[in-house]
Every structure is written in C-alpha cells, then in structure tokens.
Image (cartoon, rainbow, N blue to C red):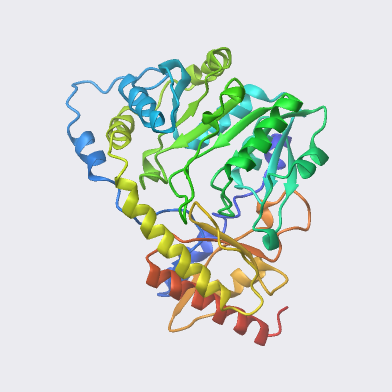
Length: 399
C-alpha cells in the first residue's frame, strides 16, 4: 500500500520537526529559550474571552460557510481604516490564514502552474502549493541586501507561460522585510503586465516599525480584480489558537468559485468567530503599545546578534522575525549541538534553521530565523546563548 506521490514530495516543517527533541531536553530539566516559532507571549485581549463567555445560544449550530455576518461586518469596518470599501461577499472567513492560503491555491492552480515566491519563504507555502499540484518558482533574496525582492529585473527572470500568480508576505516571514509603496507598485505593475494574480498575505500588517506606514495591496484600485488578501487574528491579536482568518477579494466571480470548496468544509467554529468579532471591533490604539513592545524586542535582538562575530543580518522593518547568516556551515547541525550537547547554566536555545525555507537546493544551510516573541531580557539571553553555543561548537571541531 502506498501514499500519494504528492505527500511523499513534501517536507516536514523545518519549524516544528525539532520539537520532539526539545521536549526530551526539557524533560531532563534544561531550560530552552524558544526562538523558533512565532507564538506571541502578549496576552490575548480580554474582549475575546468575554465574548465567548457571553455566548448564550441554546444550540451551537453550523455557521454560514461565508462566516458569521457580524464578523464579516467587523472585518469590513477594519479595512475602512485603509480606505478599502468591501461588501460581505468580498470576505470569506476561514480556519486561520492557513486555510485561506489552501483555498486560494486549490481554487486557482492547475497541475504544473507556477507561483512566484520570494525565498526564503514561510515554509508552509511549499506544502500548500504542492498540495494543489502547483510549483514554487523562487526569487532568491540575500541577507546582505536585507532580503529585498521587489526588483523588476529579478521578477522577470522567473516568470514563464506557466506562471499563475505572485505570492507576497508583507511584512515578511521569515525575513521581516517590508515593502514600500514603490515596491508594491513594482509588483502591481508586474502582475498586470503578465496577467497574474497577486496573493497578499498581510497577517503582520500592524507590525511596521521605525515610523513605516501600514499598507495593503487592497489600496491599489487598478489591481483590485486580481488581488487576494489573507488576514488573520493569530499574530495581530495574539490569538493563534482561535484559528480565525479570512480571504478578502473584490473579484466576485472568483469569490463565487472559491465558495464551492468552502461549502465543502462547512464552516469555521462559531465560538472562535464570536471572539474574533470582538477583537476586530477593538480601537486601533490597542496596537500602539503592542507594536512598541515588539519594536523594542527587535532592537534588543538585533543588537545582540550583531555582537556575535561573523553573523550577517540587516535590521528588519516589520513582523517579528530576524533572518541571518551564521558563521557556520550548517545551521541544522548547530541546532542539534545546542539541543543535545551545549549547556550554559543548564540553559540552551532553539531557533528555526532556514534550509527548508528555500526551494533552490543548497541555499539556506547556514541561515536561521529567530522569532522575537519573548520579553526583551529573554531575547537578549537567548541570543547570548546562541553566541556562546557557536563558540563551543567551533571549539569542538565543527565548521
């Protein structure tokens, strides 16, 4: 008996596959600073819990496949902050941003269709695209350039007659790269020229630092028929476990087609949508202190990384990730050394090796992603452990 060739071609998550080893290490009494996964430690807003506790219907029934109308309306009001005018049939509520991405690829890709993605990319994009029998077409970016990719000449080199869409995460995961208005215009013009869909994953929209503007691809009327926006409560409201996201698109013909798949999965959990509605209705001032805290963590993390000899990275402009090159040949080997052998005061650190964030063979072997989702003191200590671990790794004869 065999499983499908499709699943055999997939990789394990390079973010989660080391978790069993980490669990064994913690069971032995070692403290691990988890810098490997984007799970915020900011408290989920109390309005979420209050809304769920206040749910008083006698039957927990199916919701509509589009989602709760009151949640759709709250999302419509949220996007008005960006001068976007939406209707309910432009907003499809999904089981997190992950399901929204899955629905997009399943509804747009035929076998062999190509998706342009800047690498390093969020690893699950490869899984979602492969599940739809699509092909990742990477645009390689570089640590020395701050992982920039909105460069027309580089985009032109990878587009073919099989290209169906260009996929953007802005601000970026894993790099924290954030697009300027000029960058976004380059991508919009490129998509129009080659008749491509634009998939705009904007779940980190609020996390724009150093005075940078919060933006959306939905603000460009000349491409509104080809832009699909992914949104989510997971990062913005520190509610990863709620599993509520949405797919937003003004192309009503497309929305009618993708609904065929959404109907097949029935609906999103009602209680999660009730809580999400309350969060979307929060005053935008909620984000001021949250963003300030993440910006501080970024600065502390970046400053600590720059103190490690041989590390190459640029200060990211958004999200809550830093990607960088290490002065070692294999970041995954270093991680195994940190987990299994290295200890400093019975503590060690964990990060995400980035080889699995690339489609191009051989790239990313000496790179890592750090999520600065712990308090500033813990981030500083975690990076200090990384530096000490690299020193011990090399002293043990590793390259």
